[in-house]
Image (tube, rainbow over the protein chains, first blue to last red):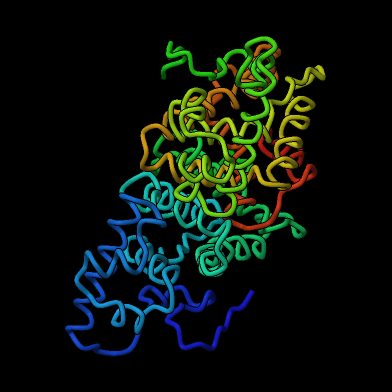
Length: 211
Length: 211
């Protein structure tokens, strides 16, 4: 995966989640730029929720926001980068917990994730991103980058737990991430029930095999 | 959920998966009707994979297949019903296993599901259906019906296992379905790795808490 694109695009490094909450981190931007950026992101969110990715083209976003296409393209190289930033604007990175136990850390992380996915528009955006990633190279790229970023906190607490002897030495951490987060996605997108904090906490405990 | 719609639409009953592999079960249909039906379903699959749901309108399907819109509407009331039948044409219902143990049955079911989702086009179709269900009432309806159908075999083997004492009496079977199938979805759509039979089998065993 191209962790460094070198194209000057405002993608956050997957290994620095705490510093990467905002995709553009130039200091003290022109307030007009910041305002138009916010308007563009808000319109992008609205259009994806209402019409899906196909209905949220740069053209459609420019038309509804009143921000010129050239201005939009100065900040985002393509629709995928813009939609991903819109998603990030409503789904900020969680801090990495450090409760002293793996179980405690996972309960915090999974509870927070389940709550976030069960409420508001982040689930709708995520479904749109997953679908677009199946057939569009730009979306596949930003989706893969975002997954690396999002999994980082879980992998940190899992590695810490393994080093403390709370997991078997040879455990497959990526597979454990699938087991931890998978049920929350499944509940939201397949079973069609909104997950909540309790559900996420139960999934954390179940995946560790401790009741 | 409306298990019986009573509109003559060819939806299979969720409680009869074995008899419901084909969405239309009228005996010996006109061969021209069967041929045009197959052509329409094939084109619908191609268009969803290439362009997504928005690019697979009834109009676009009619144009590429050469089958008149009126003919298509005689078989499907709306795009959602047609896309769902296209999905079912490449993702038939599995038989319900009966190996004698819950663990054995789940290994068969989950292994087969992971293999099916990891290969071919069913994953792309599923992502498109999930996304469309977020904002379109017809898609939400066919998606919810399909989930009921697909979960039926798992719920049958889980209930049988519970009755044999292989699960705690008070276990939440719906939540257990999330824990069983969720990791497979997560691997396919989030981690971006194709699940295979081995992965599905490991997830079945892990969810039961038996190593």
